[in-house]
Image 1 (cartoon, rainbow, N blue to C red):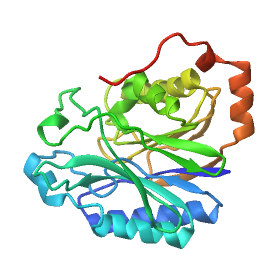
Image 2 (image 1 turned 60 degrees about the horizontal axis):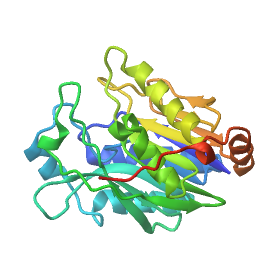
Image 3 (image 1 turned 60 degrees about the vertical axis):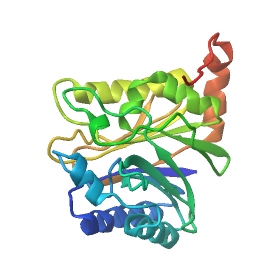
Image 4 (image 1 turned 180 degrees about the vertical axis):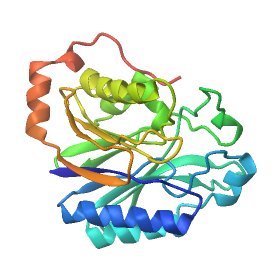
Length: 263
C-alpha cells in the first residue's frame, strides 16, 4: 500500500493552514495514498506561543479544524493524521493528534505524553501532558501507531507502540531548527525504525525556525523519502512483505530481554 508524508509552513491563520493541508491531502490521494501524515500543530502554530494564546486558539474535536480535515479525508477516501491544539474543557489545552478515516470518522486522538521541556522551551507551562496510552489503528494489513515530535527522543515510546501492535510509526512534528537539530531528527527517525524493525513516517513543519525534512524510513533503516524545506508531499510504498522479511532477518524484537512498562 502507499502512504504519504506531507509538510507545510504553518502560521496562525487557521483557515489558510486547513486549506493548505487539504490540498496536500488531495495531492497524496491522487497518487493512491491510503494514509496522509501531516505535522504537529497543523491547525495553527506561533513561534512564540503563550498559555493564553493557546487557550484562545484551541478547538474541541468536533470544531472547525477537525471537521474540515474530515471533509478532506472523505473527499480523497484516505486516512488523515494531523496535529492540533485541543480544547479539553479543563482550561488547559492538549497537544493532540487526530486520525480521520476515509469516511471522515474520527478514528482516535493521541494527546502528547512527553511535553517539550528542552532546548530552552517549556511546553508544560502551556499545555497538559497525557498519561501513556497507545493509539494504534489498522490500515489495510498493517497497524499504525502515533507519537508526537519530542516523543521521538524516547525510544521506549516507540517500543510501547510496537508492543501494542504497531508496524508503522507515525511522527507528526514541529522539529525546531538549530545546531545539530537536523542531524538529531534524521538519526532518531532512522534509529526508531532500525531498533523496532518498523516503518517510520515523520512529518515536520517547514518554514522559518523549523527543520522541515519530512522523512519516510523502511524497517531496515533505509530512507525512502526526504523532503526539503518547502511545502511538499511524498508518497512511498509500505509493504507487509518487506516488514516480515526484515523481521525474520533481524529478529531483535523476539530476542529482547526487557519490557516497556509505563510509570
